[in-house]
Length: 268
Image (cartoon, rainbow, N blue to C red; front, side, top):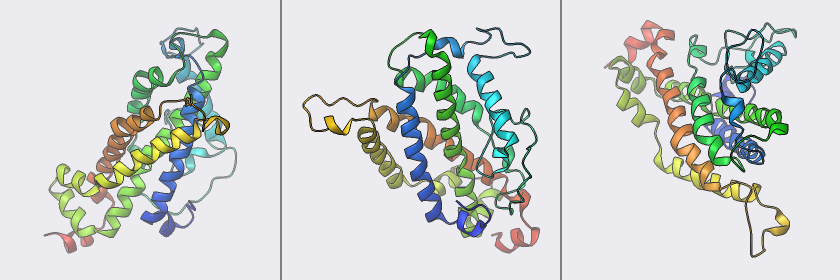
């Protein structure tokens, strides 16, 4: 994605290609996490004494990572959404003057709390190789968690670009749905069940291929490093619904950043 060229970023074909590539990242990150124990200690609040911090070890580690990444201007990019937006630091590198792509309120659309919750409570127990702590690998498990969380967050919040693209391509439809606060109508307009089913099928195939040693692919006891169905269920139960939530939340406020003349032009 070239964020200096808004017309390419908001092209639905380019967006779809980006989302497909994100699938690869998420699958690989989950496979990496699956080699470690469930490591419940890193998710228990104040399990470890951390000066001037009230939270769990994963949250602390993620916060430190975001502080570092913010200083190399990661969160200036339109496709990045921090888990701790109030804690990030000013970049050391010169800022990039990105052209406006999303609405002025786009940074307010942040579902990272929901992502953290379902990841820790529903995903980690299902993909971990064993239950319990493996003390020497608590840091490694947390590092993998951070990679997973950031990849999933980027994918879900990319729904803002999907929403903006659909809005500018059919302003008449969306202006009237937004004016009516027709959440059901908006959800229907952004839902494509056929595409969603293809995503799930593609994920199962990717997880099966990426998680299997090629030299053992044609053996009689093939065992994938991760259950492909789990990744498909992750998308079906959490990633796709949360992406739709991001799109709906974004669209419901879209007229805050629209000219009154345009609104009146398309109003029924």
